[in-house]
Image (cartoon, rainbow over all chains, first blue to last red; front, side):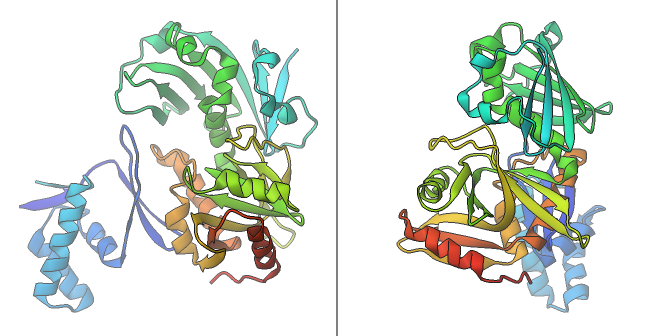
Length: 88
Length: 296
């Protein structure tokens, strides 16, 4: 299974905070990402699998595969629930 | 006779029938004054429009701020998704047209003047000032010893209470609902911010056409004692974006607002103000204002 960003999400960095703004019919909330979240968001500019995203965390942060997969799954779970990314 | 409103350095030339007697008294300090302004919008009243009644129904989208074909298009909808009123204007909002649903508008607002009392006027002000370092907030604005203080928070956090504590103490309350912040350039090229009153008060009724240099931003919380906890710009940002009136639906509209937020937090110290509702909080704030606060 692959994941990609939902369209109509604007990303901005303001005052050191990484902001995601859903530009849709009714924008009720904006979201902020921490450093790891921003890295994964940038990776998911093109379609990625869970494993590819986890590998990127291993490369970037030097963490174990187990930790990387855990963080990736948490990210994907939150982001799909918030309708910011989609499963393909 | 044509009338004008001047709010926070933004002038609205009101072209079209406007019954001054129908405007709430809170607008009086802002009406037909010789106050200075740096941006101006000619607001043309088109009135009832079949075009508005023909707009598609969109449920669960009561406020729509978009850029269509190079024009700003604002629509206020009712719960059924019908458009009550519409503002169309140039990107810099030097000109705007107001039109409305032939039947639903007066059912909802009773009059054009009543609509200015609620979101219509606020919408135009947000759009007119956004590219010129302007931001509107849910909050209160007050001055103390000539220094401006912005207190923000959602309903029930004490905006009107603290405005009243300022006003009945040594300070002056400018507004207890929608303060306006404007950015200017100082002599040394840095950013300075002013806080303005507006004609849209809350329960305490403060609406003064006055301005002061903005020195502090406080995020209000109820507490057993008066405590000020400084925030970093990034901590303040997370809170501020939820109380700022930012048109989030189009980057052309919100990007200038975000630039202003960033400059604001880089120049004006922010803190959480946990307070109990008595006059002691004004002295606590006075002491905080007297202390030099460095933003890291």
